[in-house]
Length: 260
Image (tube, rainbow, N blue to C red):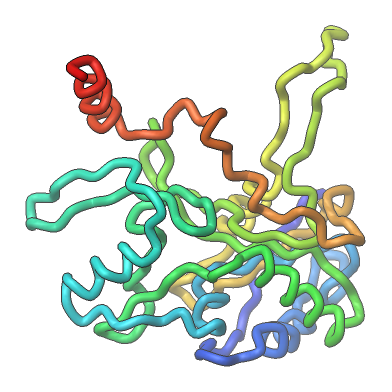
């Protein structure tokens, strides 16, 4: 049985906080349908990147549009697509130093003090590893940890949470070599298990409601003793990326190449 519940009663996280110390007391108070409490081996603790970034002092000044644009530029490795908005601003889909492709480089001005913006954690996989170690020290168990952020998706309306950091979790579940119901060998199927855990947890979390952490239970087969390779492996390589540019950018580049 798959269970997920948000962690209630977390205090606000500020720069320099030990996130494990903040989260552990609330995790102890969890009560499950079978009457058990707290976090057990095989559980996955899922944490919104915003609280991780706050603890890691990733808050920057964004009093003006220029300062916000500078913050986005500082986190941009490559512009994938950009479109002008009616208000004069520009929407940019970019690749970040973490290898993520996101709107505005993941720079977020919500739920932070006026005139500031929050950058993504510098190394979300390392953040997940450190949080896992801290929870182990305080709770005596080593749950899997997934750090999440919210992204838009090509071809789909709405946003969804994905894993940007992970420790102790099977990130990619390889089904190649297995047989389907008709006995045919699967040759291409690799499940983004960490992303699916992130999305499941988002159904019970509520960042705007002060619930940025959830625990998912029932996936012990995806929780590992070792920290593992992390969520960085979810980023598709340039050679395998069929959608590396926006449609208008790809058209413009093709037109320029044709004229060269």
